Length: 153
Image 1 (cartoon, helix red, strand yellow):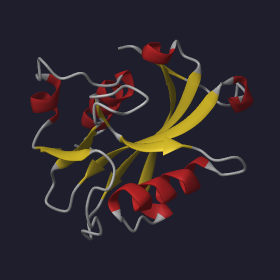
Image 2 (image 1 turned 45 degrees about the vertical axis):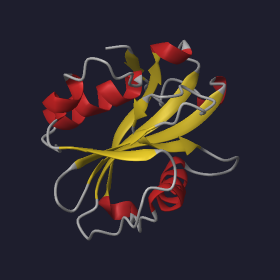
Image 3 (image 1 turned 60 degrees about the vertical axis):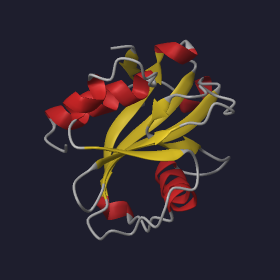
């Protein structure tokens, strides 16, 4: 994998250029929901990615995640329903950006649409990882493998 798990008890978050959140989503009908970025995106255009985005100044990662999932999906996320998977860096950013990574199962079906990028749905992790001609972020590959190992997907 091209990701590094970051131990935040040993590394200061302020040492990273940017801080983000990323989340793998399982829909109410148990589909893995991902985001296909448009070709006009500034960062990694055309990539398949998890949902999330930048953490604002003075915002906690979980607050950023709840905000981003509401903005991007109309989702009503409760903190208690989110599983933290840690924090990572990606080789594709030369490990300069910190991403707090999460898993969320939308058991109540609160997602109302996809307002950023194009929603893509998959039945299995294997189906996603076998895609030959699709660019995907390092973090997405890492998240899929971790979620599968933890029996979340």
